[in-house]
Image (cartoon, rainbow, N blue to C red):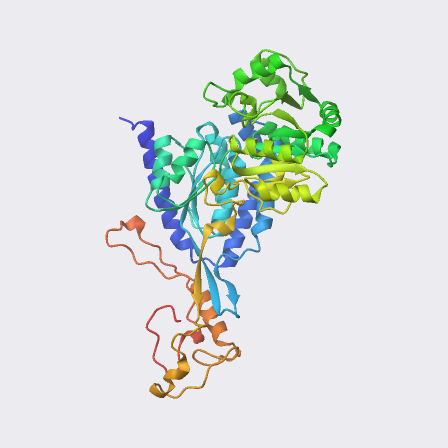
Length: 541
């Protein structure tokens, strides 16, 4: 008798985590050069398959536009790789001579990743790339509506990684995703950290799994067009952002807030760019279609073209409509279209002055977007600074599109498909998640403010020369003339900053760490001279 689907999902989650756990033991001893070769191969393969994966994602989910999904796939591979390729994630990553401290990178372990249906292939590849850059293993749980395309993205980058030398089993994806299976994945004892992108309940479940978790929140993004703005550019940014992949990015503009003196110019520009201004009756019908009495968004409208959504609501708009605009008097439950909509439907508010604009932006963020993102279009530097200081958003984007600006496409933010909302939005991270967030950093700190100065103890110890920076040596001077700290760095690099784990007494054979069979021979610097006792610890320092 076959197992029920939920039980199959549970078992698959356990099997994939154990597979990844075994692979990560070998991977943790790879050099920086080996790691970078693997990650670049993943990025190259994903970039080359961007169009194919975009079509698969669109066919399976029905969301958005294939052309825009291709751009997201290219961004999540090539652009992300370019942003992290020079990041040190193996061995000694920083040497502070002044503070006499070394920083050493250590992998976190097995990364569990939740993948949404709105951006499935781009998010999967992004999370796998940043995970492996830190020498972590990876297991993904796809959205049930996007299983096929997510599995295909996994296959492409996994094969590329293994061809470049990665251990088998390092990159994995569940094929039977269920709530029970995803819960098992997140709570598994061998999972180290969770990357949670998805619905609110699933992100909250990740926070409750008992593991460190980087989560995201909803993005009810306001865009304020202030009276000193370049109105034509501002409107172009808002419309193009709302049209991109038909609004499925959580960073997409949800409402435009227009300063009263420039409202007519802004409306004319919106209409010139294909916007449709909704009547009161059309807004009512659209509200009933898009949200239930509890404020939950209807998935049938997510990532659909304006004319398709309008037909579902019982009215017609031109086939080439770029965005539907609903002019609202206030924000709140009485006005459902002031919520996050994940579609080309845009709320519009009119304010008089930046102070009113400030208050309306805060209302939007507090109504489902705390900590996420907002945009301001202005040429007044004082107003821009006020918005930066006072808004409960962790990405304040200036004179740019919000949809792609928030992910780092149009500016110098970390290129990312996971945007932290900070404690405003219930998360521990307030910036764009990247590879640097998936490594532990150990610190080797040498004494700089001694409680017991060494010179006080010279009479009780064999006479030794006084050691002074920068020419002091720990054991002896190497033929190369390296200093004491350089010798230590050499030893640490040989070990890649890692000590072999001892298997637990109760560990199964599959749980035992895999020994590295390619450990380089000890350096001559590892052996102290005969006049000194051998060190007590196996690290050589």
